Length: 183
Image 1: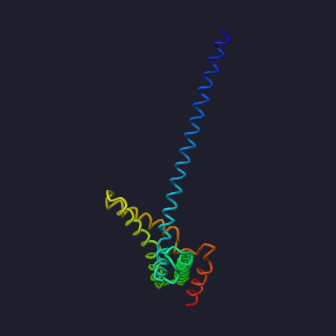
Image 2: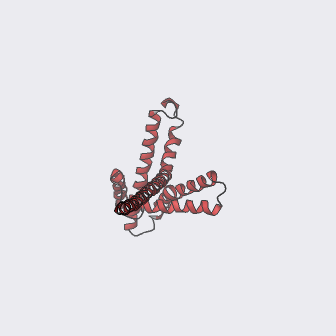
């Protein structure tokens, strides 16, 4: 009888061990799938946020035939340079907005509206168009809701009335702030 009891206990423990292992594998796989979805969503949103700058770079560099094919290295570098300079211009405007806001007047509203239209409403509208054209079965309310969510996310990212800028572009922000404070 002792061998029967020992075998019974070993079989029971082995079953618990395999159930625990499969549960851990399932949790790990679920975490991996959720992580991949979150990463994919974040990349898609970042691409929509950067879309106005990339589009501007393409619009400016596309007619320059002397640079070679459309996807050649010089043309892509030019697109990136134009996009970066447009991004720097946006932060110059943000610096101007913050400086004019600190001076207590209504003049800050004009550059603020330009910033919001270019950096928030344009990506939101692009997200709306992406949903409408890629998922035609989705209703208009959903597509406009996703566009509004992207616009609000972008506004929260740039924080146009706060005194902050990324280190990479801080030089442009400071120039706009100094120019607005001097006026």
